[in-house]
Image 1 (tube, helix red, strand yellow):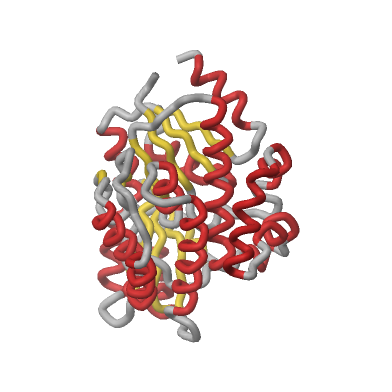
Image 2 (image 1 turned 60 degrees about the vertical axis):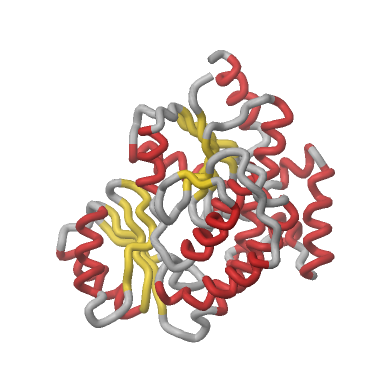
Length: 313
């Protein structure tokens, strides 16, 4: 079997109807959502099944919905094929999904934790003007230079290094507007404003980072069975206390996704399996290296064809 990494998407991948086909095939998965509702009072099943989309987009609902979808997709896949990955990685929120797969977190505990994380991320910058925007067509180095210039008077940083030509910036509204203007002047193909609940992965999330750290201090994180490639440094980590520290830092720091994938390629990973809604990461990976194999499991029906390919290796 080829060297393999399991990867998990972050916020923005959600859609109304997500994960429902898995629940229809395996109704036992509903118990996780019932227990979540008992603890939070939130009927996440109805939000996922019926929406409306605006409600599902709210960060405290989006984050557990995506984690739930990712984990039941992985569980269903793992019941049909015995394949342990060499590495796991997740994009922002996706790190928490990865931590369920590598044994650091219990599924139910992770659902509640990311709900709290979403709440903290909204609350941290409530009422203050902020923005996030994707810059398409400039290198990461060019975007860093632009952010350095724009942040002389306002706050803006490169929040997500997604591909060689796509970087997301985050910060104060004025800072992001200034950086977008500079990006267009520098030759960006386009800029895309993002509809999000806060200036994620920027220094403006400091309160959320502290609150998340306090929440995780009450939880039991176990040693990782499989190394997690951390968003904050694109290096493997197994130690539970260091993982907690990195998750707290991640809220205010850049997501080094491009470096993460390049590190995995340098470690001779030849195939990536994405678990979760919309196949977002597969598109990013193909922009990083077209030669690598990427398989995405969004729907229940995706599993059979992928297992057939894997079993022929």
